[in-house]
Image (cartoon, rainbow, N blue to C red; front, side, top):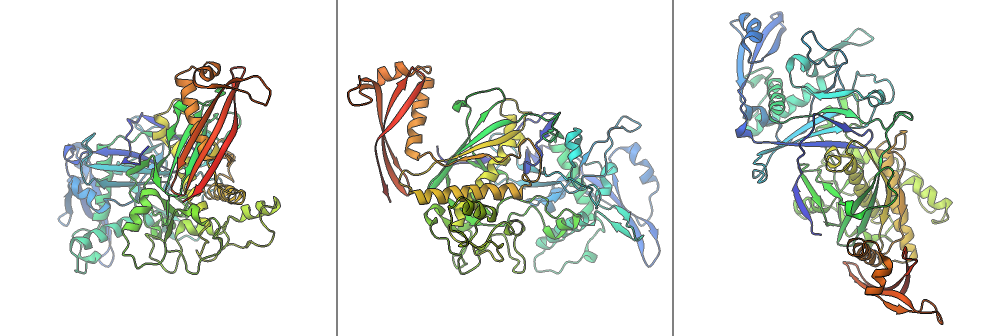
Length: 631
């Protein structure tokens, strides 16, 4: 199974899809061909509507393109009106490859006088959008652009002091619907919403959005004319950043079909749905790593490996890309930014779109390394499994890609530091190891880390946490579920099976088990799964027992028995095996002796196992010979 880099596979979305609460940041992918859009330029008028000579008040008036609707605005024209239009290409320009907040609003139960949908003023801080121009048109579809709509599925529990910022728990229990809204008549408040605070002062609750858009627009204008000082007063129009944003939303609504959204009820005890149990099998090698996911549906007793599918890793720096199959066991510290946190933090929801990991893996990590000059401080490791014994903190802070603020740590790292000690061990896991007498009491620090000087051994756990985060998001991703049976049901990660090299010592097995359990605890804490009572919030069982050579044999045996012999073990052993005595002096019975050589980047393992059947229903293995060599 070779590494596969590809554009995210597009789905023909139904009119309504479900989101799973507390399943992380979910992204919906869309595509369009810009030159195929039949869309006229968006027209706007900036008009003086109040104030005085010292402080004029201007208003942006979007025109719909319908003569009857626009008649009142155009009939009230003034000599000082500033009218202009924005072409579709110009609407995209300031926002290409940038994350921006978008109005995905809750649909009200009552409709308007004309039967049209009406919307609540929110949620305001749970949806962001990004459009990227592809280097080459997608050969499968001809699309020139890809769109990612990101939705934070963390639900708010209590009263929200700054308005309706995020979907509430009741939205899931009552099956509230949400829709992407681009009509200025229904969402113009998203750019400016004045409310009176308890002291009587007027506050603009949406100024963070306006400032975000203005910053992107000013950066775009300065990039057009590098070396020139461009200020807001030098711009041709007062509200062009608003106008381009409204034209951008109009273009997206015209180019792609964004489905109506609803949360699956995984919270109610009485009306809640039963999730599909999913298992993750991971083989982490010194050079490369791969994983598969296997689903078990309600009422199904066994596992069907034919229904397995590969673990997919979304490239967080270029989220239009996915990787599946084998990926490099490379770990790089990196900040994951979905927009400018200077503005996002002012929304009143500081931990929105928090990614539960602060390292990148696989091809994305390699690309981050390739972009360096080579003179920087350390930012990661290749083959972190080689450093399991290196548990002392390093002398310098680890350097984070995409982060240049020396006074503040990356957002995802700040969120995780309270769960980690100076060596990078998860504090709850340190306590659990000491209780189980797997770690000397008092040797490991029990206080949260202050600086990111984690031991090299901790990077194996951070890599596991990143893989688990991707798996959790993948199994409940709307696109992933749409390709699986019973797509409306949520998925729960029920079990994680981690394979081990045959040559691994008992101490190294204990270290890997501890790192894996710590990674689970860290991801559960950062995703809020430990604090919610959800059908998917139970932590999965961790199995760290299978050696890689035996797994290879078992996969071959499963394939032969199910695909060629219809599960008939006795017939299989008679045809493929040789009569052998199970014990000295016992009568010979049909048995099969398998030899397997596993040549890896760190170890080469030889395993010889003899299998005999029992009543045609069970295979009993007996290890005949085993040897392992470290490379």
